[in-house]
Amino acid sequence: VSFVDVLVAGGGPAGLAAARAAALAGRSVLVLDDEDGPSGSGLTLWPNALVALRTLGLAEAVMAAGQVADGMLMSRPDGRSLQQVSAERMAEACHGNGIGLTREALLRELVAGLPAGVERRRERLLDLTQDEAGVQVRTTGGEYRAAVVVGADGARSRVRELLLPQDGLRRLGMRVVRGTSRLRLGTPAAEVSMGRGLQFGIFGLPDGVYWFAAYPARRTPAGTARVSGADALRTAGELFGGWHEPIPQLMASTADSHVLVHDVVDRRPPAAVWGRGRVTLAGDAAHLAAPTMGQGTCHALEDAVALGNALARGLEPRYLRAYEAARTPRSAAMVRRSHLAAVSGQWANPLVCGLRDLAMRSTPAGAQTRQLRAMFEVGAADLLLA
Ligand SMILES: Cc1cc2nc3c(=O)[nH]c(=O)nc-3n(C[C@H](O)[C@H](O)[C@H](O)COP(=O)(O)OP(=O)(O)OC[C@H]3O[C@@H](n4cnc5c(N)ncnc54)[C@H](O)[C@@H]3O)c2cc1C
Image (cartoon, rainbow, N blue to C red; front, side):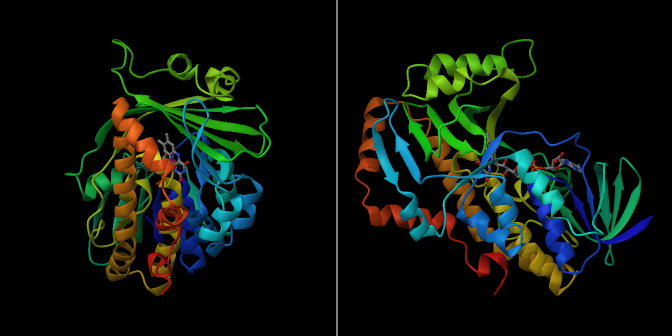
């Protein structure tokens, strides 16, 4: 049995960033993940993620792997604007713009950013038990003992299941198809077009575009475990084929193999603390949100900074509870806001959608800025810097 200060289960954004933060805090770290290699589609990192990355000393590397968006745009299916925030106004209000990059590129930079001495093993955490002095962890590769265990093992977290078995997933009735295309659009705005129960998002990547199409989740065809990329692309083509350019073009230029399908789930917003004893959670394991605000990875990076600051103070349970208490208000608000957006995004009634569009068109600039700041502005207390 080998001993480490911090054992991190999960080598996604939360786990890798937490590993760096813990190592920078002077702790010995072991990261476990049994995934074959980086998978996933594009994602957007918003200004709050950049604050976290800057604190971790990774902002430049990640920015170089991504494409900065030219502001934000909300549109109707015919392309008419509902709301527009220029890059300058975003930068002024939130100290930055969104950055589009692939999950693969982000993970590559996070791995490259692991200090020497952080050990990674291709193993899966199976079980854990703890006493006053430490945690005993059983994995597919053996047994470890750690002063602290961080469950950064994603939406279907095994660590969370062991800590909080009562909290199930909530299905939200929305299916999201994501694709990446090599189509060059210059420097596009981060654009989301809203129809009746349908949404389409467009975000630039350094060498193309990633897009998402959200529509009501129908039952998976009988006899199939899940909807294939080809099925999803066909359905999206039928639903969004008549929407404004470049939407049809984007879908037509996307290969089936570059499509991912998710039925949206989330969990109840986190309560005051989410850990027990010497075990805590980070990222989706702690606060799974609907992807509607594009904040899951951003909050995983924020978690890592706060956790690093807690671990710098000590490895006793009270420091883990301080980390959780610092993170809960902001992550609970993010889960709630994302849930609401998933519900309102499915409104299909023409009258209701007309009112929603009217409200978006007539939101004054000051109110828009306040909404953006609520999401993208992260304070010292949120990161346990204070
Ligand atoms: C459709 C969609 C679009 C999204 N778009 C955005 C976006 O634009 N911006 C954004 O910020 N977020 C976005 N997100 C959210 C984002 O994907 C997640 O919030 C983010 O991946 C969370 O990181 P994580 O490290 O907590 O979990 P994950 O990325 O899920 O990583 C968990 C890791 O743990 C490993 N693991 C699992 N179980 C074990 C175990 N027992 N032992 C060891 N390892 C284990 C897995 O193999 C995986 O590598 C989106 C999500 C979806 C579904």
